[in-house]
Image (cartoon, rainbow, N blue to C red; front, side, top):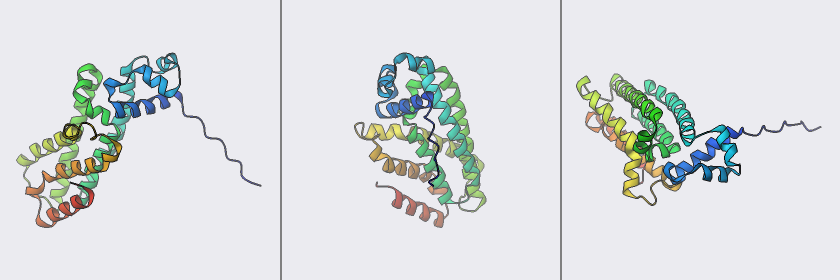
Length: 222
């Protein structure tokens, strides 16, 4: 007798709203997506949307909360970086998360100017990223692949944070019509990861430098 499989529970409406909002924000940019468009895409009434999220900022904050939780989990991995390959994987994970929430980074300055909660929380995001970059540099130095003193480490960590934070803006400026299309993601992320780690090249020993360049050749298209 075949085993009965319990039917999957339908996703809660609030979850579905956030998932659809993220997809629309990523595709069109947050300023170009209205709550009317979101409710139409979901085929629910504007009143139903308003019941769960009374304002557009509530949608943005809900998505940012998800982003913060995912980021905190990824940043913990910085403490385990021992070599260039570990660093590559860590930076690439960061870029994958940025891509998943690319609307935040595409419209970052505009969002921060309009949303006080985001403005406050993003200061913490930057500090947490900086701490993670310091941990990455310390791990590489501790295991012998990186030669750097404390005076050089601080500005280098900051430069890596700036590059990770604004790389998608650079990609967008290079090719506004196509840069943020899903089929461009792999190349964009690979280039971002390489350029973030290329800041380390003057400080890496020869084997680590060669390995980084091999990784870049394998994962980037230019």
